[in-house]
Image (spheres, rainbow, N blue to C red):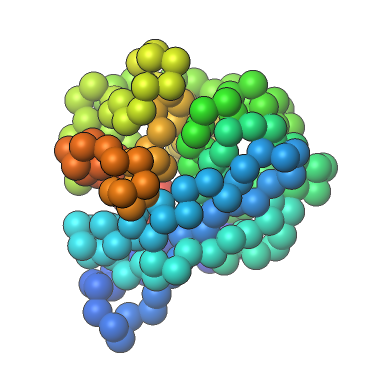
Length: 218
């Protein structure tokens, strides 16, 4: 399975954005607990289109939706998880996500505000031996096609704290990136949804493209 996911990752960067190339999808992760996992419905659509333009990928903007415990997670090289509230992973969910991430998959968790007290213990169930560590500004994830010398861009105010990027690292590779006090997903949404300044939207999309490029090439 590891080789399959790595093959998919290489494949997506081997083909330019032409209609004859195979198309892959990003996926939104569905979880239990009552949190609004379905937030930001236009985010992955716009991120896919931006990556197709800027990275020459061939992502299908019609993203997938997949349950945390479903074997279908292995159909997607990149999972996006967001929301404002409670997150609960069953034993099956936790084991399935662990297998997926160890096999070469990538999970981006984007705190849409209020997730932090719940997502940390949920991910501890997935990787009890790992801790989220704040990634330094010189980490490769901030230096893909687009340069972010000061780490994550601050998209929304939230608690008015600095944006932080945390990672779960397995054998030197970030397998889960957690954007906190940032709200990248809101910045990816259609411009009329949050009415963010265009420069903020572009910064959010560029950081999202960096995540895609890192996930598919590392």
